[in-house]
Image (cartoon, rainbow, N blue to C red; front, side, top):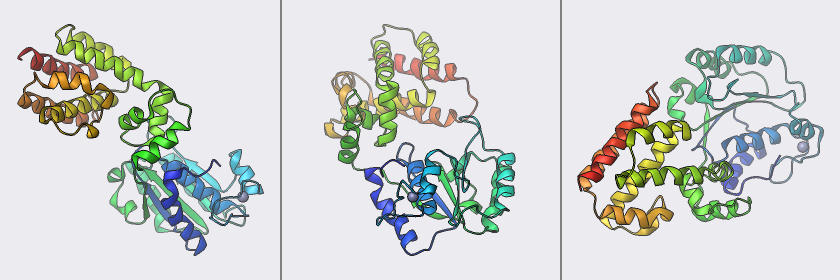
Length: 328
Ligand SMILES: [Zn+2]
């Protein structure tokens, strides 16, 4: 197991208290934004529940038989449940198979740990079946549910779990950690794009997300100058990156533009590196028009959860942006 991520110390202290007091919750719901290390925390806890030679701070030893089995992902008392394909649901068959496994005793002396991540991806019937695990606890079994969308879980499940919320770390902590991860992009900008979530910022660094974002921003600026075609850009964007990401970027540019219009303190911008461009643009744009576009972007974020045509969604936004700049 990797060392505990530095910003998770307070969460770990909480989990360690459960261990020291030997009051392990039967079910724990770990929540927090994407990229904060919820799964890392769940695995640290799983290691500690299964390790036979715990260290003083409650963390696993790293060399006992259990730790070694966990490292090679063959510990029989750890069951990880996740979608069979990324982005897909966790189906009823997966939960039924879990229930069957739970009818047997744990194979070792310690606990048996089940992780479900992302828990909100359980289908309705899977969630109903899972409720049985919560209502009829099995011996020495700990259920760890991990989600960044707890609101999408049935209340009947949430109410039966102890909760642990992973907070967004202070900016300094996130930046210092990112500096140690050998990423070539500016950690502050990555962290800002990831809304403060260090692991997501790291992923953005590895995926060259900043390059994509700059590419989109250049196209967006070209539209403002009436030098490109909104429909053509909409078409290229739907292949370029995750649509929700592009909609988030546009929303962040718009919020920064609105802030520039009010001439607020530069420290709070989403995109400090784009500030010069946005400031110049804000001077010529109509504030009411900016708010209208902001409303459309918020609506578009909701629409992305539905099977909407992405090209049309981008077209509507980009045409409005193009027209907003033309009318100045
Ligand atoms: Zn160990």
